[in-house]
Length: 450
Image (cartoon, rainbow, N blue to C red; front, top):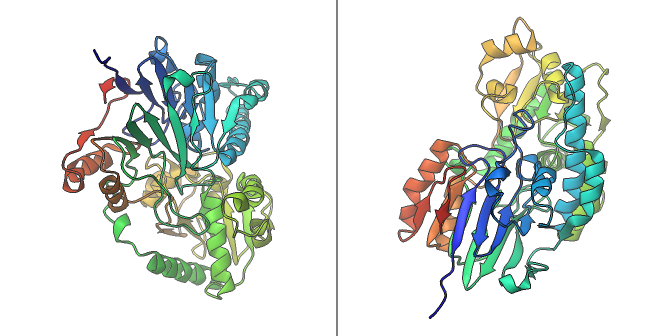
């Protein structure tokens, strides 16, 4: 009699929101954790996935798709729960993960000191030193097994997800079944990175749905958006203003630097100084060192030649100039929050949003023009600066995600990493491209048979 086998799934992190991604898949006697994220907007312990829910289940491997905190920020905590798990990621993600985890500790320590609170980190620098040797890295399209558990029959392959440097989707093959987890994915090219290069047919697809509710993103033409950006930017600079681009240190900083460089080379924007402030400078150095290993055509060290210099905190904000600064959501205490407060009263200045911002963060409030709330937050009588939003996302829009589902033609689609309206829009429209697919919007902590 042929033995039956089981494949079960449980999201232990966030599902219907952006943050703390962590998905557990059990293959008979073996278990795999896909990502070990953190919600950096919540108190440290509150932002960690519910790893206790897996206390009676095997976790033999942890696969990290990329080095943003919402996908790997709780990796040290996960390893405290599952000390025997193998940790797999791409080479670039391994280097970026170590840097990002150390930076997170520095930020937490600084915030605790500013708020006169006790510093209670999720982990320590010493613990990071201990676990770094556990990271095993594999390049794209290089299959590998579950080391030490070869009898499991599990085989993993990373595919370029096109999101940030080193980002990957994960293909898991087991007993003639193929499960693919997209992580965060961008199908078309950005200004540095090429679009995702993913496998074809799979049986189970776990996909992000970040922009599922955005009806504008799929209508935007890249060339027209670049033209609009260059035009608005030139207007502010010709007035002598400072244009602030609040960005994520990892990914958005580097992509926007490359766009500005190309616009300046083609004389589409004035030749003014471009400054970088915040943690993005450190990430620039890693991009300069590692990017050419993935994209040989990239000139080694190019990002370093684009910037005019570092904007010092005490320097007067005199224009015309472009200032790229973290955090992308203008979180209180960040460099970009302080710069925005200094720039907001002068009508010559502008704040340009070029990436995602949670609606409840200062960045989200500013994007939505909720100035009354922001005036109180900034402690200003009025906000006169121009505010613009441009769509240069590192995520696939919903039309691209539907094309991905059609191409992979899975028997089951699991929708994650999106607000509830985004997940529901995807669920309504997937039957149009894959009518045979079972569609699942899971609940965190619930178990599902796949």
